[in-house]
Image (cartoon, rainbow, N blue to C red; front, side, top):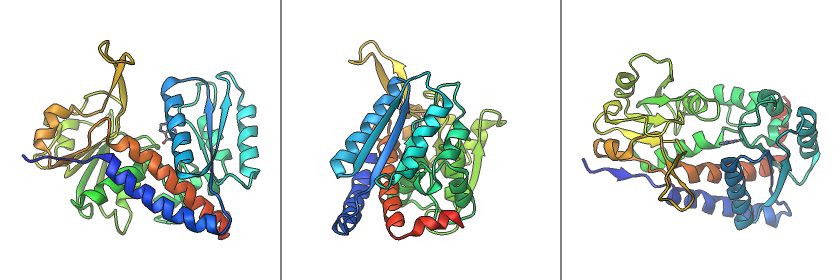
Length: 302
Ligand code: GUN
């Protein structure tokens, strides 16, 4: 089968071009979108993600703030930082890098972020808006990135049988809600499968669009995939590799070499979904700024 590789970069570039256009309008009105990223502890992968977000803000010309807290910081300290950012008019988007160290209550922390600045789309108000097809909220960035890749691939989402493996709020569950919404980029028939799903390979092999978001390297093999399916690999797993410069390499949740020959289209890892997450974060931040300037953040206080 002639397999199309869905690369993230050209699609992310398209999103950035749209961002720059919006940014120009905002800047000409004297408004500069600002993103604050909060990093707790020193997890190397989290540090790398936060670094990429900061670099991208600089590249586009957004105001960017990084708050670094010690691994053993208290819940109160973290919440106090969030409350400062909520009150800061130069900040339109707040992202707390996850996962947090085990002693911190993630749900409680996210609940403290102003929903109007929750560009990560994880606050219950934004998740509720997503579930209610209310476009005034923010959806999480990785699901938005996956949806955009599917739209740009032009293979259609409406009416398609989508199977998502993974039920995290950050990816699987939110992507399910997004693809289920009425309207462009939605109208799919969605199944969210997970570690307890019986006959997982059989369930997956019914999919026109299969999304792997489980965080297990090479988990999805050819018996999970229908001939001609579109496969989106959200996994970014570090596996030890003594021959690699950094001592590890990045692999997806899909066994690419075995699966690709069966697919109509598939995303690579690296070079696939990963770059889309940051692109959608920039787009959400610029939108948060526009909404604040237009007084639309009031939508969150209804
Ligand atoms: N960790 C991995 N991906 C993400 C993300 O999209 N948002 C946050 N906050 N943390 C993450």
